[in-house]
Image (cartoon, rainbow, N blue to C red; front, side):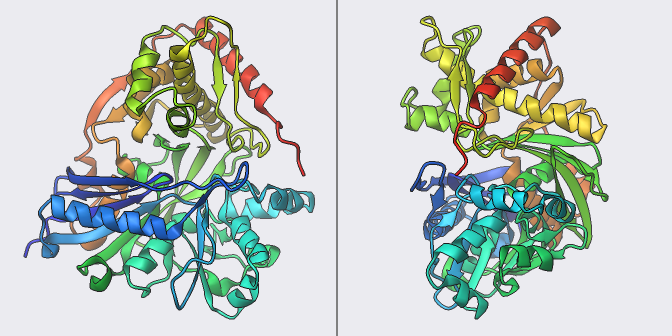
Amino acid sequence: MAKKYIIALDQGTTSSRAIVYDKDAHPISSKQLEFKQYYPHPGWVEHNADEIFKSQLKALETVAIDAEIKKDEIAAIGITNQRETVVLWDKKTGKPVHRAIVWQCRRTAEICEKLISAGHEKMVKEKTGLKIDAYFSGTKIKWLLDNVPGLRSRAKKGEILAGTIDTWLIWKLSGGKAHVTDVTNASRTMLFNIHKCQWDDDLLKLLDIPKCILPKVKDSACIYCNTSAAVCGFSVPIASAIGDQQSALFGQGCFNRGDAKNTYGTGCFMLMNTGEKPVTSENLLTTIALGYKGKIQYALEGSVFVGGAVIKWLRDELELISSAHEIDVLAESVQDSNGAYIVPAFVGLGTPYWDMYARGTIVGLTRGVKKAHICRAALEGIAYEVCDVLNVMVKDSGTSIKTLNVDGGACVSNMMLQFQADILNTQVCRPKNVETTALGAAYLAGLATGFWKNKEEILKKRETDRTFQPEMGEKKREQLYEGWKKAVERSKAWEEQN
């Protein structure tokens, strides 16, 4: 039977999604399931790894049924995932030894401070392209080995497996047959040498992590294994795995040096393709963009820890809105934020500040500020954070960005993207399919299995929905941005270091 479909599994920070794509890369069936977030202490964020897998499997089963596709028509499954989140599990039983520690979690800030104080920052940066920060996986693994009784000795005996969420899903979907990851996810662990493309013995020794618990590292597009029919009901190749932000870069068609995208998801992540040579930056992360046919492409990345999650905060915690759509309606009902700024530094500040101890602030409040102004300030806050990242990316790369390609759930907001274009003074391009994270994983799985021929065929499938042109005057832009920078200063170093 002819292969007609690729299924992408998009495992995100707050939800698991599955999307079926046809030969034209059009989504024909989609299912998204949210799962619980755990906050055991201020600044700590955890997930239940079993809940993640069950929600992802349910989404996969649902889209296959809804699309009325036969299992023999599925060419492959591609996986994209929240990146730095880590799971450790029992090799025999498959049971997680602790909740997954999420990329947003700041519990290892003290470990990071000690590593920095001991003078290890230069070595880590040179080998991994990353800063020493609680954001990355390495210190999370160390924390688990240090704090779960008996875990380190079990790990050294080879009884424990570790991995980012792609590794966990592949292991579970294959029925425990494959313990693998791809170069993009490995490059986010703070344990992987991005120049030699291998786990680094010096870094493993520094964090006292046994290499035997780590997965085998492969290209982003290759056949890792087949799904287990006993688990999924059918056996098809798992043919791609790639970190969500790198997947969005690929899904946007940013195949060439200088191409850039920003994803408005739970956080905001801007990546610029820098080609086959890594570019060093003081403020940005140097990361692997793609492993394909044995070749590596690199990227510069700026990371905003809380982006679209501020909308969920307004909905779920403050209960100011009842749906994500409502924030756009309210924000558009006023001309500006009436002087209010929201800095959503709930779990610290990322690029370019890298302040693990910053916390969220709302400043500039007067009696005239109402709910609509708060909603607008929240959306503008996201755009300001992205502006911070783009400014430093242009400066450090020496490459100007003529167009910012955007995607992710929050970029459906016309008001926010217009403000984004205004505050950047750069055109912003939104594709018709804003779920380019899933699309990137689908494209790579399709390339690995011959479903699509090459990158040129993929580029022809990209369709633009709308391009936002800057309309704001320079004086107003400068005034607003100065106010933002003052607001950021108020949020810095709020939490005292232990």
